[in-house]
Image (tube, one colour):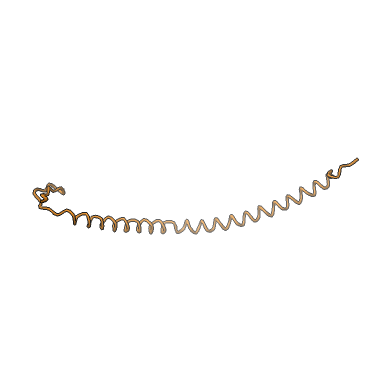
Length: 95
């Protein structure tokens, strides 16, 4: 007696062919999407030196601005009379 879940070889081959066609379509869609992603990445890579240069410049300006501001406020609190100086070092007399 044949089981109702039993399939013939021809049915199995037909299922395999259908799955193969489905897989081919999926691979084609994947290649298309991957091609689009690579195109975007290629455009980004072309502009990467400009982007990196701009970021470095902005960082340098911001760090310099913060450093200059902090130096300005730090020096305002250093009032005193200079007793001696050696190079950039000074001995101050604070009353």
